[in-house]
Length: 185
Image (tube, rainbow, N blue to C red; front, top):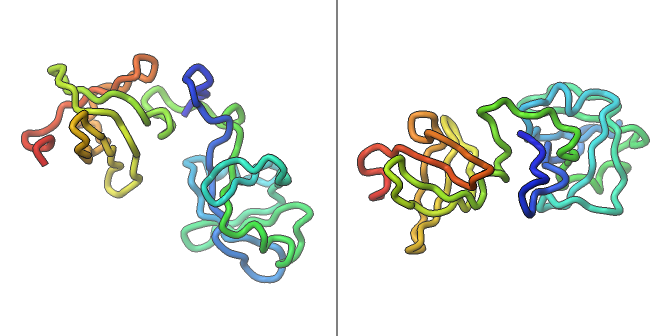
């Protein structure tokens, strides 16, 4: 993760969670975290911005301050300052939580924001063009890159160290060493 202000179309805010449902009567919302930094992003006193159902920043929405946060099942229960009851948070359900890119911890040298991968040219180590990254799917055990070739075909390529040899955001290129048959699928 890093600030991508140098690339055209880089977002100012990134999605960090999804508000799935109201929990109880005391204004808590069940949040599905969409960040690797749960402890810092959702710590009491942190602020998050409200996005719409597509994850786009809602300019006139209030900025929310996390008052309390606790683990619950596979997500978090979060209470926001000035949202003390169920009625106060019902309108937030189905929306995304965002943070400005400038406030997020920078990534390690071998990490990237997914939006940075979109549009990168994918080539093999031998220089063969495969296409451009159209989408990134978060799956277990590894994420998948949806790469669209010049022929319009879509190929799913595992975003794994054994296949992805280099990511060069500045050059707009991702180099892969595909196992035999991967590009024939």
